[in-house]
Image (tube, rainbow, N blue to C red; front, side):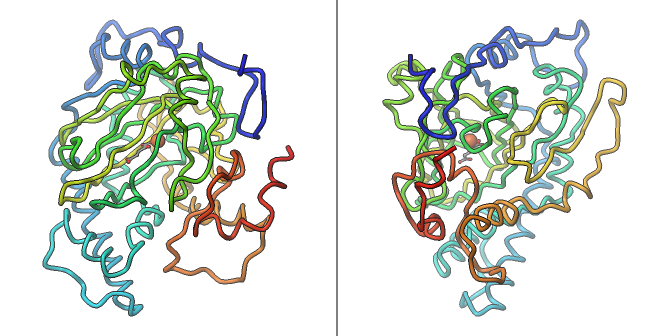
Length: 373
Ligand SMILES: O=C(O)CCC(=O)C(=O)O
Ligand SMILES: [Fe+2]
């Protein structure tokens, strides 16, 4: 069986189906806490690997996130303008268009914003929202940590850099993440539809409890990718029956796990498809992020209302750490470039480098030496 072959560091000989399938479903509360989902939806999460919750957040909770994003875009515009990179501040455009104009003037602007990783209070409030944690509790139990990998997706129209190819999230993490259930809430900041590049999942692709062989990097991006024939061969995905388009209205979310193959479609609309992806797992398991950044404790059985220590979490900038990590192998010139529109990280070392581009260029000296271990 292919499960016993190990060709790349990311391949694993072990599988852990019971961590992700219905056997992992914790006992459900007899009396529901605020926000908790019907047991059928939780069952679907474990059996199919995903569930769409069409309506969950209060309008003001996500409106506050929209405002925080507008501020970040404004800061970005000022920074680029101040650095002589863009001709105009494009202030006349609203949240769903402004970054597109900035991007046209300075290609890669959206990547700067994506990797900025600034976590404003409204994002923190959504992440540690008690109703949200009540739902996470239905999936992983009462001890909950936020995972260090979270993202603000800046999906401007027709942009390769934000069209994420098929992957399992663990393919970006180190192999310790193959043994722990990580729950992701994918939260759009507008109605997410096929046209503006919502997500697609390969239902039940998590049931084998394994990470299929990925390769790197997709087109001109930093993304790893999972070929469709590999999904079929290694994860028993039926490309005709199992692919599910996950449209999510504003106010709702898509819940997935770290083993389910998923991708996002091209945005062929005129609006930016903003979204947040936030993750949680049990705090006693490794987050599998190459020891670059730890999780943030949000709740325990004994302290369901604990105060989240955001300052320690905020102190480490994940993309900076990720870049440092690969620079150790391939030292670069000194100096941080705030206009750098490339992204690098250790996930690039886990898989065969089948395609080089400007993100991988700094790693190009001796890529094959990475795959010795
Ligand atoms: O938002 C996207 O386009 C991709 C999101 C994704 O892959 C994730 O949330 O894990
Ligand atoms: Fe993903």
